[in-house]
Structure formats: C-alpha cells, structure tokens
Amino acid sequence: MSLYVIDDHPLVRQALGMLLRRIKPAAKVVELEKLSELQAAIIKNGAPDLFVLDLLLPGVKGVTAISDIKAMYNEVPLVVISAMPSGEAEDTCLEAGADLYIEKSTQASDISAAISGLFHEDKPAEEDGEEEVAATAGGETKLSKRQKQLILMLDRGLSNRDIAMELNISEHTVKVHLWRLFRRLNVKSRTQTLHFARMHGFLMS
Image (cartoon, rainbow, N blue to C red; front, side):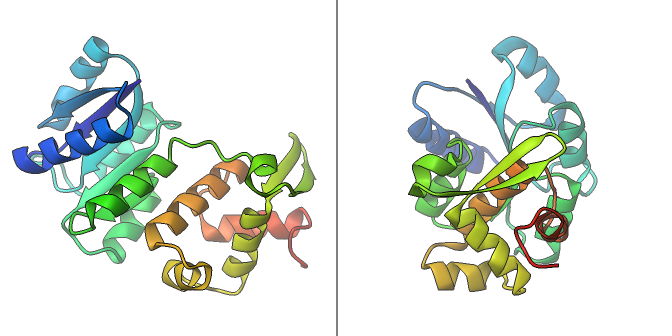
C-alpha cells in the first residue's frame, strides 16, 4: 500500500506523513513537494491507494491538480488539506473530483478519523444487521440503515453540520459516510443521490 502526500510546506508535509504512518503502519508513505514529482514517485514506489493534496501548490492553477490526478486514478481516494476555509473552496474541490476536504486547522484526531474512514469498506450487513435493497440495471444495490438514514436527511435538505448534530458525530465523519454512500450508488453529488433514491424506491417520488 502506497500513500502519497503532496504539500510544499515541509512541516505540514512531515506532519501529514507521520499521521498516515500511524493510521497505516505497514503502508509506504511517500512525501512530495511538487505535483510534477508524482508520476516518477509512483513508478518508483507503486500504485497509489490514497492521495493527500495541498490545494495551493506552486505552479498549479486552481483545482487543476485534483482533476489531473482523478483523470488518471479515478478510483483512488483523494483528500484535499487546505488552509482555506471550507465553503466555496470545498464545493469547488469536490466538483473537481476530491473525495474529502479538510481544513489544516482541524484537530489531528479529526483528520485521522476522517482519513481512516476512507480505508474501511462499508459492509451493510455488518454495520447494523439490516439492509435495504434496490434492484438496478447492474444488479442489487444494498444500503445500510445508516445510509438509508442519510438519504432521508439529504431529502430534508440538512447540511453536513445539521446531520452531524442530529447524529452526534463530527462533520468529517458525516463526509466519510456520504463518500461511502456516493460510491455505493455510483453518484457524485447529493442531487444525484436523491435522484437515484427516488428512481429506485428509497424515497417517495
């Protein structure tokens, strides 16, 4: 397992590297200063299992780095770590293909919990013993009770913060749950999730 950290600030890069080594002690953590170093590093260190990316890299305009990486490694989780407050910046990054957006001011324990969640495959039957099933063209889609609960909350128009308060979990944990839900349904947004849910019987039309 190879995990790639790309950040031009040495202290931040080293701190993120240490955090990833605690999360996945057996993984190879590769710390890079520039996006241009990535392809050579992958050839040397192996296929990626995670990218942790600074949003404001030298010589990279806007979210170009996100879209470029996702174009090559669409199935590999990509986490943006940024000094910029979430909001418009987060929305822009997620639209470009990022899986999570985390502010650098976030506590290390919350960053660790959010990134750890990306490595745990969501197994409905093991989560709570019950699952909802919808038939799709590609077969059955199985959702856990928590995922069905999230769909209902999205249908109510709740924000991540609202969901976090109602479930008594962190906003970053909510983001991980939504990331798993999107992957399960093969969608990229809340709007697409609700459309899928209505089309396949998880919500009343």
